[in-house]
Image 1: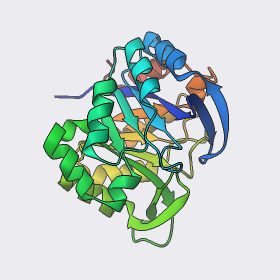
Image 2: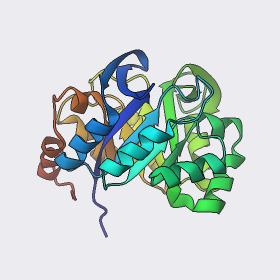
Image 3: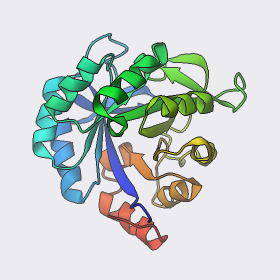
Length: 253
């Protein structure tokens, strides 16, 4: 049975405000997360992703009150990430209204965190958030970064994704830092290689700029498409993206 393609706006949040930059740098204010969440839900978003982009860098927890206020405004699945370091963090976020939890830097530092979350809450709760750069330092050509793309690891992105899935990750959020904010299109090669090793859904992130970019990502192997600035700047709407996907033959909710 075919699974419907999801269209997911991303709310990158710092200090309680939605921000957006290019390749994770030069962040600028893009609005109130609660208000934007409400608008996107009304437009027909299938899910929302809420990433506290400075929580790990600042060594603090996710802003729970903003998560709660956002969850109170929308009634679609909400994925929250940033600063998650323990199963207690996950429990608190779920209690605040999150449906799924994104993990990145803390899981790289201690991979057992994925097992612990999966065992306590189920694999459906865990989204492995991957901030990936192209690099000749690893066999696949794609290396994992941490701390909002600021620190490059020695981990091959494909190897790490496969390990995380074995440990219990239920979804991969694949963000190309090279493409992030450029509006030149998703990294189709990256999506394709992730699809080849993944038995769980792959969410494509980074680079959306025009309507045709979204079906390209789906044809490359993505199960969902995530974007930020094109929605925040009102260059595209959720409805327009869904119409484009539908026209290309994708099953849309």
